[in-house]
Image (cartoon, rainbow, N blue to C red; front, side):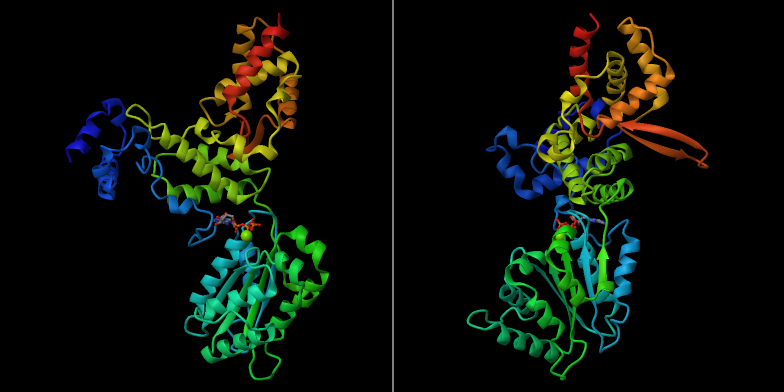
Length: 441
Ligand SMILES: Nc1ncnc2c1ncn2[C@@H]1O[C@H](COP(=O)(O)OP(=O)(O)OP(=O)(O)O)[C@@H](O)[C@H]1O
Ligand SMILES: [Mg+2]
């Protein structure tokens, strides 16, 4: 307890103003309940912030494998998938779907939440057993059937059984339990490549011995390009109308996912709506929900690691960009892209950087007034409104800035908001200032 008080006493009053004191004390207690107190005097200082929980409340929710209670922004697609399973409440019925889409478009989480919700929904009507197999880890058809069997009967022997025997076991097990099995073959292209589509055929025919009906439903998942190349035969076997292609996430979708994760994983008040928008904007070129989660994690960790008695418990723009080199390599243009801009395009860019160092977004009106100040500083005559617009377009084409039109209030006012999701504004400003020195001599 003394140590805890000691820790609190080191915080200045400034840093405590506006800060949730209760949370802080709770966090301190949690730290010490975790056995920290005992170990702290032998630990090195550099470990102090591990588990301190200033920004991250629950890191489990930033894990890729975590399946949220509810997925966000995919209502239409959820409805479409449910549509393909509309007859599933009927005891003799089985259904099929093929979900395709690019990396991180939410295929796996869509299937997982769907099966889980369906299981609950039919609780009093039909018992549903789910077997979700990732074929990347079980890439031959024999391994896949073994995994399915294990899910239903964890003690089922693996070894020495032929495919025919394995399938027979599967049939018996499901019928004995009088339940309906939904098999999800995730990343199915791995299995198709190694073992062909024979297993699909076998699974689709599992009821053909006339002793049962509606035993098994099948959901296949694959990234679209792969399935296109591999298997028109698979699609025709599963039924063309059962195809469910899903698009990459757009800006709005990524914001919803980022917001949901941040709310679950981070302490309230440690991030702003604008920081969430900036994170979503960074992930737009890939449309990958996983990137959004990685960016939240990276930003939260960066913020957590720089916390001391004088810092605000807040994720900053710099935190968001802290792992750019590792996370965003493929989709951003290089910083050298600014090198051959015209001097006044650089002045416009410099005015943008100066604002975006502290704020996540700005309006085009802001640009004009800040550009005026920068022109004064560099003793230059301002270019016309039209030319400034032309430069803004150029900066956007080079992916240095991104612009979005927001409708305000009744939708009549349309404001253009600019942000710099792929670069740290300070880096660009430093480079431009250096270049301007030479160009405007
Ligand atoms: N709509 C959503 N709501 C909440 N979380 C989502 C949503 N979509 C995706 N996610 C999360 O984003 C991450 C990536 O999603 P998921 O694993 O389902 O993508 P995928 O399409 O299966 O990717 P891959 O092609 O690499 O297998 C997961 O952590 C998932 O929980
Ligand atoms: Mg997946």
